[in-house]
Length: 316
Image 1: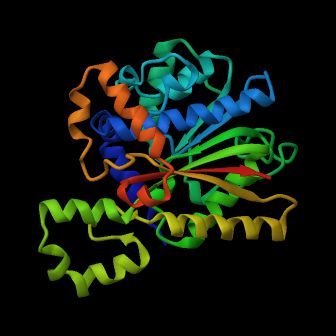
Image 2: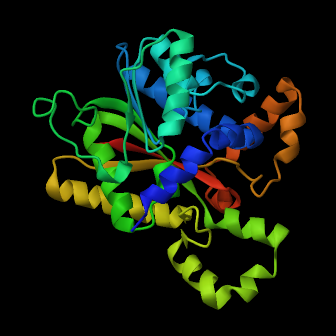
């Protein structure tokens, strides 16, 4: 089981790290934003009413501004401020709740919302593993209620949950909080990302630590080598298997399921740092690269090239 106190403490001490990481990992950020924008467009086609959105594990709310602006320059979006997602969605009239395990990251998000002159529905400190979902009438003050949200972003928890039961519990909770035909976006880190990293930085480590660590890591995806952080890494087939299991659990106990519709390679064919120089390009030139990567981001043969996967599922 995951020691989420270790995870929370790490993010409390490094509150700005993920925000800055996405500046450096510009392509991952841009592709993810485009996919989320597509989800919002799909939801807006069904209703012209403001959307209810939950950003679970959203940290400082780094995914933001471009999701509401169809003509936004995604290059400019890569320097969005903390809580930009929640702030911009709220500014556009959507009802937004931000939840995260890190108090420090939520404080950054809260400050930015105040500075921007918008009010979020709620900013909640919560461990995704221990969320208890109830009907609204049973707990009117809770933000974790059944059939409440049109869109849920879960772009952090799966990076750290070591036990499959924890991952299925979180996804089942998210599904129960979605309205009918609501959309869930879930981010994962791939094992290939770590293997590519050590192949470049410390290639002998795989052999010298194979019996003591990597044999188990390759089988389970549990990356516990760093005592200050617990992480989980996966691959596309295991993501599919996870969603099949969640769908089966939901249909056994509830009147709905969770159907996986897409898996997107967030770096396309440019994982392992190959996109590093794209950040130096002018916006127009950079956007051409994003266009090309988007054309093949769901190519089954390229999913293993990505460092991050974004899975899109719908409650049905």
